[in-house]
Length: 217
Image (tube, rainbow, N blue to C red; front, side, top):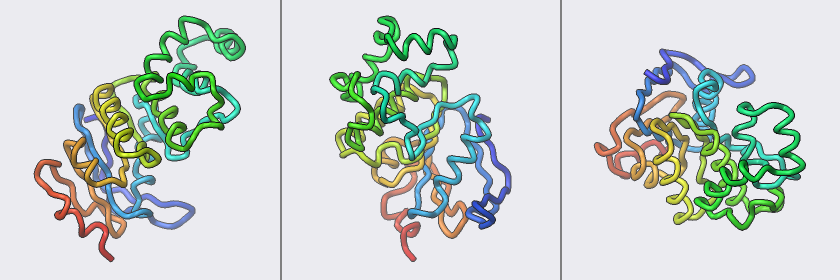
């Protein structure tokens, strides 16, 4: 068992957002959390990230980029803990060729090769989102948590991103707004409605129409 929650309530500033949540994620699963905006998908991802931060890469919805730093430096942040303070400070001023060589292929994979030394704050929303994903890809590991990781990209770029994520991480849990994309790339669908997990099913056992009830008032 990689992630596990058992009959738990979660809230924000004193208000209950999710009730009686039980969720077990095994290694090798690709889980999509779906539901209306405000249903609690981000809360659930946040709880998992807080509890399992030591063993997961993470793509937050707010991206966590430093706008005045380059795309290279923002991606490189995914490996800060692997290097000494001196190395990181030196790399801030004079990016080391070996570090550039590690970052560049990942940036190129997501269409950011020509933006490597552009300031992150000058990029489009989709490019910024891809920068945050590149940071997680460089961080690596066996599992990834992501909060709407493709929301700012078009369908083509979204598939490029999802291909990169699912080929790089054995276990993936993503909050997603695009149900069709969730069905295409996930092995399991977890739908949230009325503060609860309303459906938890293998992705190949449901259709888009089966999930429409999650979005009906």
